[in-house]
Length: 194
Image 1 (cartoon, helix red, strand yellow):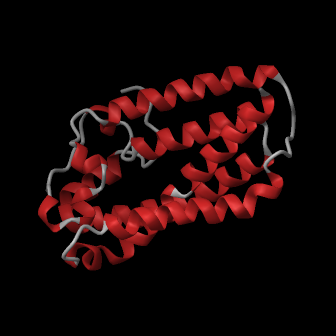
Image 2 (tube, rainbow, N blue to C red; image 1 turned 90 degrees about the vertical axis):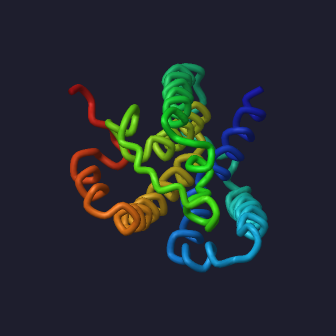
């Protein structure tokens, strides 16, 4: 059972850690992707899967090296899993499926120009990325795998770059309205309280 959980944790961290890299392919060249006559996801999704494979091959030698082996670490892991699932559910409120899937960023026919600042987004600008982070931390803490922690750090570094690019694009799309929102609401670590 431990090996299965470690393998699942490793694979989950591989996939989650490539999400910022996937968006780093998109954000610097948004106009290029929007200009494509066919859906850019025909190229982007296979490219993302290739990222999984490359990262899995690179990290495979370390997939069983654990800092610790204890049952108790699954208690905070379960809490983080629950927080992540809650954030995912809240992220879908007031946000269309097209927005969640990044359609306005890459498809010219899906240029939904609607800035959402209510619900969970009144406390954190990028709740989906926070949910991803919670899930990665849950797997890392639960399994104790060195590779899980390493992939989490990789995702945080690439995620910070990707969020800066996304914020710049959102500022370009929404102007002063987004700047005011960005100045009031934190990017990833939510504002607690009023």
